[in-house]
Length: 573
View 1 (cartoon, helix red, strand yellow):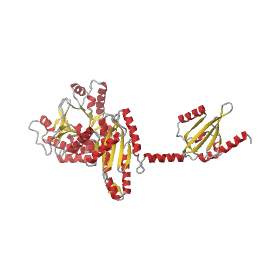
View 2: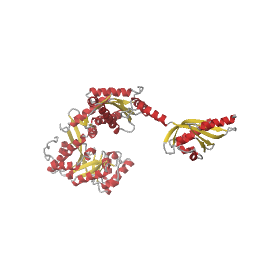
View 3: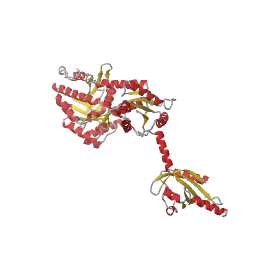
View 4: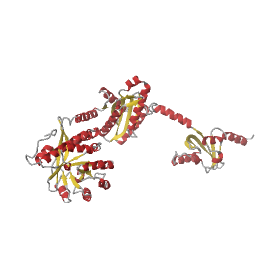
């Protein structure tokens, strides 16, 4: 056997090897494949020959990937790497591919030879090892190692973007006792349910991890640009976690209540080790447990003080109605001649130690906690009593009050209003209920149904903050409302600012077209009043005509001397 025959014989043997092979011409057209090619791809030699290797492309790689591959192959004469391809049956699989260019005596490429083998099993093994290394096998959540990697990335991003994130360390208060009493199988099921609950309400970018036993961590990414804002957000999430894990869990005809303590630490802090927020959160967690469990604590002392003050305010607010600490204030509403034709009812809290607390300090907290519903019902009843008192002396005055979203969406709200009117004998024609435009546009069908029920009672209805961003004439035309209230922000630069002036004129024109009256809120200057008067605005409210004052003070100054009857039960004199 001569040398050339030896080479041909060796090439034939190599081509029949277990490794899949194909040969293309210089234009990339397949000239030959071996049996291993058919075993791996599913394509026979008849189906492959004459085709381009694009036949196997999976679609997972970009055009840039293939451009880089061919650039290297043409420059260096070879390329090797991992590629995802597609078998004839549609299955996508990973393979390790080596491609070499074959040149003739003139150093011109005449063939390309590719050899490859399926690495699905190796990839599966790698994925399994990764799963074991980075994920908890019971809950399928990231473990401590992966959490720390995410935390380091989040801290670096926070430092670059000048924003804050937070770490929550969560400990299940009664888990060990239940697990010891009911067995590890029940304990495992409870942990799986906890993992489900924790991931249910978080954002997609947030990370929940299981550190083993009854401890979990939560990574909250990109919360706010300020520390205070991030603290509020983190506190809200921590309370959701605490409440979610305090809800009963049903397992095998038994009901379990775990409860949870949560520690919070914010990041970044310049120059600190990557795992320091985690250590700080764990320290805060221990403080929560010392405080009696089922609690939330911040690591930073100042934030904890702020949180404790907020919790104390919430606790004190819960008893404000029973302790008769809420007060109604009235701000006059006048007509074009300056005569008082009504008043807006505002709520104040007369705290025994802190004095008068303005609404922006406690109303958002009341909304968040749901206490606004009880407060709203108290306000509604007191307004109705006030209306009845004024009607009794022949001095009725329209009173308007803004409804909170929670109160407005309460089941059978119109029925509750009707009960307050009946209990006090108030004339509904003198009561104006306001809802913001943003609230009105949510669940438009539900809003119209509630407004229609209120309208059937004879109540005057108003859209507050009109024009602040949700305006829709189509929706407005469907709503049974009587009045639009121009938001005070529009009047601040009227009549000097052309843009704001045009907006106010447009709202007045819309109201005239829909036969609605208009209340202009925030009138503070004679120029603003003159501008509105020349455009036939119906009602004016603002510091130019009077600041909010206690209801009794307002009535004494408004009603004729000797016409004000004694205060009704429960109403502060």
